[in-house]
Amino acid sequence: MRKTTALLLALVMVISLAACAAPAGTETAAGTEAAAGTEAAVETAADTKASEITLWTYPIGGWGNAETVDSLMADFKAATGISVKVEYLDYTNGDDQVNTAIEGKSAPDLIMEGPERLVANWGAKGYMADIADLWDDEDRKEVNSACQAACFTADGKCFEYPVVMTAHCMAVNYTALEKAGKADLVNKDTHTWTTQQFKYAVAALYAAGNDPVAAIFCGGQGGDQGTRAIINNMYGGTFTNAEHNAYTADSAENIKALEELQAMDGISFDASIVGGDEINLFRQGILKMAFCWNIAQQLNEDNNAAGLTNDGDEIVFMSFPAEDGNAKLCGGIWGFGIFDNGDAGKIEAAKEFIRYFCEGEGTEPAVKAAQYFAARTGVHGRDLSGIWSDNAIMNEYNKLMPYLGDYYQVTGGWAEARTAWWNMLQAVGSGASVADSVKTFCETANAAAK
Image 1 (cartoon, one colour):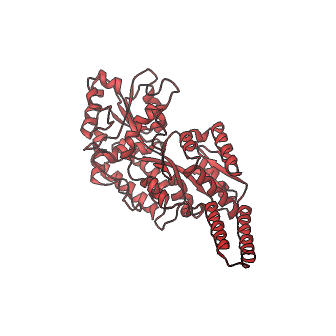
Image 2: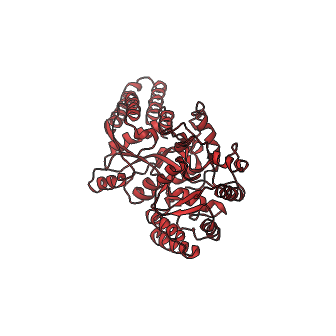
Image 3: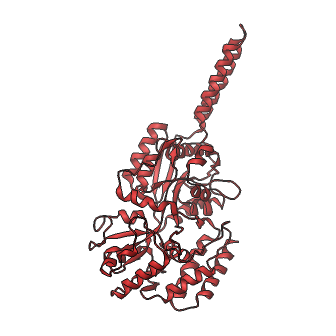
């Protein structure tokens, strides 16, 4: 990132050296004129940066908690003199609130969420400020490459600076699998398994009287990364192409996976639930596997200790099954973007906010508050790998991070594709042809992507 203060300091030093080397009799006039110009530049920079900005944030870990965020904002103000007014959004009507604010010319200065909203939606529509100037060579080396790629557009514009990331996964009721005599199918060290091992596990749990074992939930888009991941990974299919301009879910690999799931005893296609409902059914012991899982769920202590169901069964988080055991996991990326409201002072203050929390002294507290993993390995040489050294579950879950796959959620027509996806799953669950159903999905999604 460009450090304005450092540049100005360097300029002052150059001017001072020039004054010292000037011939006698010339230093007073030249030095005075240069110094005056430098002071004016400093005053101009200070005058253009706003002293108060607004931040709207979705509930990303502790960033949805006012007490936590108030503490972070107090530290930021103490360091920069900039006050931040915060408004908290939820995923039920948060998008509507933002869209209404945009239409009313009252969008916030800063917003915290993921690239599918900041880059592929509001950025693509021209509402976000390009913050590519915040990146230097060191930032590009330290920030996870998948995070970088998701935050930039094809023409080099950047509409989000990432601060945290995670990998979504699935979970297994290990106690139930032990009772079924097949605990050896789960590797508790690597948390990976093959497609064949997964199929054996479903069969064993079903034979032990568990029906359903797991659900392909399709009552809506909630948690749909889980259903995409199980289908894409079983035989190496993809959801979009690498260029993120076309949907490819109708591949032979995905058709094979869907047909097997459609015919598999113990797997139900449930149009009455979404991801959150599946999690509740899993915690209650009704389901023995969950496809909508991540570190937040593994840490959850609402009804029992972390890593246990409501009844005390052991939960083991697992990568999605792949033929060779090396899945490509869907990721979550969260960071900050700036709405271009036409106020240069607000934009500059918002950039100062991003510098502080994404690559400055506020980075580690920001990551800790989010309760996810840092999007960068270090802050200008300062190692961040030990952020979660005091948390055994976070350290263990970190084993999944190398399996983070392509962040395809920035593909055009994303909102329409999500709706078409769960409609397709409902059709498959009702017995429709898999090949015909995924063909219809791709036709709908690709039409929206153009």
